[in-house]
Length: 116
Length: 113
Image (cartoon, rainbow over all chains, first blue to last red; front, side, top):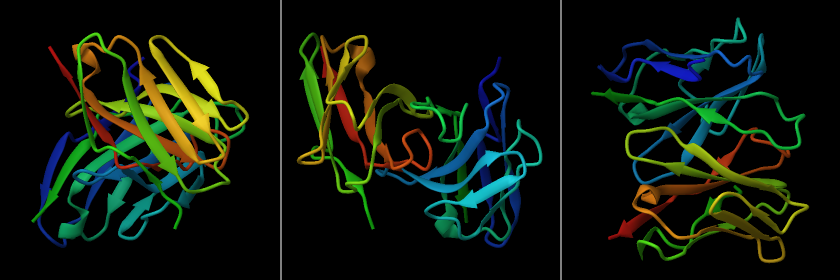
């Protein structure tokens, strides 16, 4: 299987434009999440989903929307891009949504977004 | 808010030596901790995890130590190799699993020949 895939790898937007970052996993994982990583910093949680049809906000949700219509896909939408959203975005998934005693989280390769 | 931080932003070690990367956490409710390795241009890669009911856990060439008294986590890498050069992050969760992780800012490990 391919694991966690993200598209596109790179994207440049102008302020005010909208776009969707795609994330898919083929491991039948329940839990999926989106993080952003700014230079010299750790990852910060944007949104997460514990299963199809269920999403919730993380630490930095403002300016982003998500949906989880299928187990496999978890797209992240920027409705009106701002320069502050310039970052590297990582999608991750894990098998269980907190019920397992320990649970490995797999990360995608990332999308590098620049907002001008 | 609660945060996870690292004592040393950079660490250089000689190839073959042991490496120790430290992490301080402030949320006493955290019960699950993970170490990730991130190579340039890639996503974080799971290394090892530990639950709060344990003090030590060993993997292949890696050991994680947890000191709940002082809220300190460390990653020990034995016989460090050039391929170990990367940024290492600790992360914590209050949910007992890799859910809603809070990440530290990272330590850059450089292995010298």
